Length: 90
Image (cartoon, rainbow, N blue to C red; front, side, top):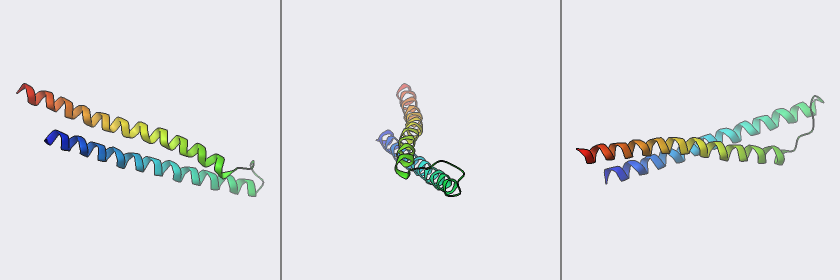
């Protein structure tokens, strides 16, 4: 039962990491949009559309958040699996 609780905790850690990375990417995308919009308003850059830029940002955020949280949860579950094998050997 203890290993199941640890696996659940790793899932919780993965969810927190996914949310944090996704939030980070969305915040960066919003900042990049505002920067590009300010440059356009000053005549220093091309026109930008918010929906296009944020759609790309959301896609990158989902991919990278899933990658990082998957790596962390996979590493955590690997340690649980290894600990379970060692425990069974004793």
